[in-house]
Structures are given as C-alpha cells and as structure tokens.
Length: 168
Image (tube, rainbow, N blue to C red; front, side):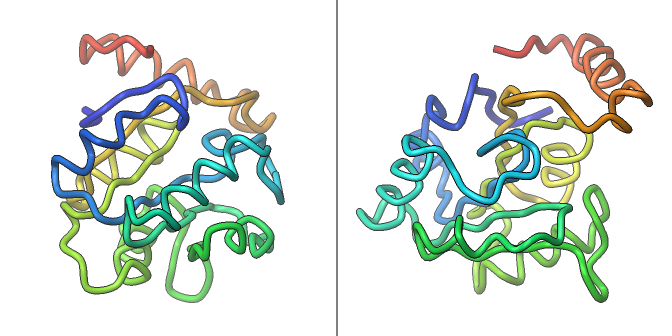
C-alpha cells in the first residue's frame, strides 16, 4: 500500500511528507513528471521542483527512470541527480534500482526518502519494501505499447481493488 496518493505531483501534500521526516524526494520520470520519453518538463512542473529545491523545502531531489536516456536538461533545473539502470543497477522493480536511489541520495535513512511514481507494482510497492515513504500519483498519459499489450495497468487496477484503494 502506498503511504500517500495524489492526483499529480502538483497536489501532493509535501508538508505531510516533511512531517513524516522526509528530506529527499525521488521522482519517477515517465508518466509521473512528464509524458513517456520526455527530455524536458513543462513550466509548472519545472517551477515546482525548482522552488522545492531552492527554497529549502527538501535537501535533495532525485529522478529515477528505467530509461538510460540523458536527463541532464531536467536535472539542471533544480540541481537534481538522475538514477538509471546500468552496470550492477537493474531496472525497477529490482531492489538494486532502489539501492542505487538510496546511494545517490547520500547519508539518509530510507524513511527520509520519498519515492513518487505512477505505477503501484513497479514504483511504489518495491520502493516501500525497500523502506522509502511512497506516493502513488495518476499517470500523465499512455503507457508504452508493450505495457498496454500485457495489460499492466489492468492488473494494477485489480490489485488496487483487492487492497480497497481507489486512485484519486
């Protein structure tokens, strides 16, 4: 079960995360911060991340993605850190991915890191198992064709119903 749920990253109760002791935010990129494959963010999302980082609301912001594309244009907006698969780091939902996020965050306890994503079974559930505080948001668009073919969202909806959870 996710610790928090929100319609989008723009309406997350960030004060509630701070009250829980969260000092670092780690965002999934595709369908959480922007459309699938994005290399930039829309102006409101970029402004949100920039203000959270530069006005001291959070100590670090990380981006986590299963994509190995260059995310430097996004991270430069808010002095963020990108984490993606490569070498010993496998794709989400593998534990090594969340270990890499934890390592990139630095000397923080996992409960001081919030992982924010649009997929229950690939983002928030494994992040929660690792020990992160989790926030599930609604996706910003359509999944990749391969994910639609294997009915990943349909399986996720069934899982949410079994847990008695309804997306906002």
